[in-house]
Length: 317
Ligand code: FAD
Image (tube, rainbow, N blue to C red):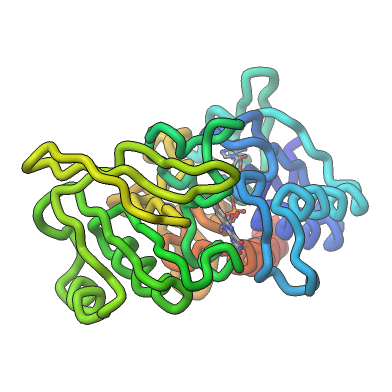
């Protein structure tokens, strides 16, 4: 028999959708993935240390602990959680068909909550592990991490030349003593208005034709080595925080173009809802959001997707 609700994903969007649909007695089946999109089950929050902006945790909570709590709350309502990646969907008719490497089945509605993966650069010293400063000064989310005490009144750097980089650099100047904006090309990709706002900010120094070649420090990040691509000269600058703002990859390749996506691959939803171009398929969280990209907004749209799916099933039994 077809599942009533199939949820694909494992972050705040997926688990919120799971909790709501389970409490609505729709007995959801959730595939949390196995290193899907290169990220562990639990989603992007598994890659961060401290989360200070999710309501309900006044002292803050570690990203992995928050993910465990999302999962435990789904389990409390008997959500069936499978640690497999959905590799294929057939959305041509209802019930929709899904498959993983281990199994296949059918579902009346599908909630896509597969998130996005923040792009990182392979810079010596900027990775995970004991030799890298990932989450010890290196981050891919200024809005999430910029306000941490370790970055207050310190020199920071942002890598990128698009709108996100401008926004992140601008945001970081609230806390930083100075923000270097490292731009690989000798011009910006950002829109004029965003670029101008950053240029007008006296705390931002633009380093054009410049790349970061190493992240250096002892316990945490202390300096970065940068290279001027025009002169080939390298130098070290004091920098306690390095933020990648080079974009995200939405986890939508397995959809095989069966849903309307935007030019960057994000699922298009009807504004104010989670409905997609295929009736009965709903999308929530970062897979359909390239603007807010926060745990709380992902959870919010997860709730919307659950209610949208419930209403859909009531009128399309
Ligand atoms: P994601 O968290 O992106 O999770 C989706 C997951 O679904 C994937 O990771 C994968 O495990 C799984 N999946 C993908 N494809 C499949 C498939 N085909 N089959 C099965 N499973 C699949 N936000 C905050 O609010 N506060 C913070 O402090 C904060 N810090 C952050 C720090 C970093 C370094 C990063 C990268 C992000 C941070 N964010 C923070 C943003 C936040 O993590 C995301 O906005 C949020 O996790 C998005 O949730 P989501 O449910 O849409 O999906």
